[in-house]
Length: 68
Image (tube, rainbow, N blue to C red; front, side, top):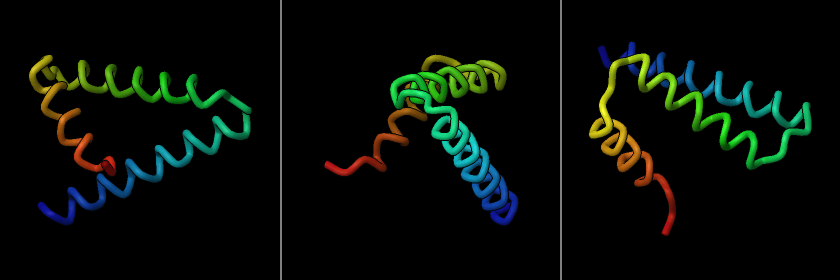
């Protein structure tokens, strides 16, 4: 189980890196790339039948990675 989660996380990082690299190659403004990532996250979230409460909880966990 832990190995599966690690592989999924590694795949997610690789996919996000490809996305950002393509945005840079295409000279997409950072704000547009940020919005596109947000939109993709929202679509995946809804596709997984997650709720607003789930969204808030996930976003809260993501915020823990920001430095103060």
